[in-house]
Image (cartoon, rainbow, N blue to C red):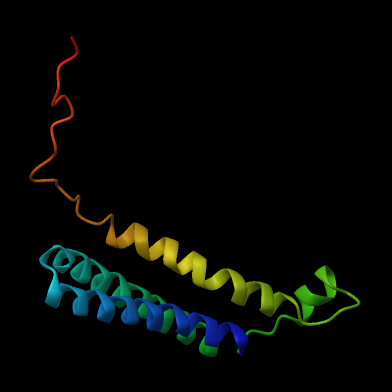
Amino acid sequence: MFLRILWCLVPIIMLLCTLWSYLESITKNHWKQESKNLFKASLFTLAITLTTLLIDLLLIDGIDLTFVDDILYPKSGDHTRTVLRVLLYPILATVGAKIVGPSKQIRISSAPKLNKYKPR
């Protein structure tokens, strides 16, 4: 249950950052691009979270892992589900990032000149 709450906190925090960035863009123009990037990232994390929750509820709870638990953890019990749940979100985020690809490269339109003053 704790991991499900933790998984849901990631997109909520991203959406709050997007909202904060959007409010900043109302007063300052240079935040406009960042609010778009944060919104795309929050949609990505929301999709990963929903996929993780579906896999957790439908597959991990339905699998009979008593044989694996008896081999790996003979005295302690049901730890295989916990390990699968802990590793599920990072694995799905990595696979999703590979499928979606990297974000677009940010170009600097007016870079400052580094050699403003020439040495004597």
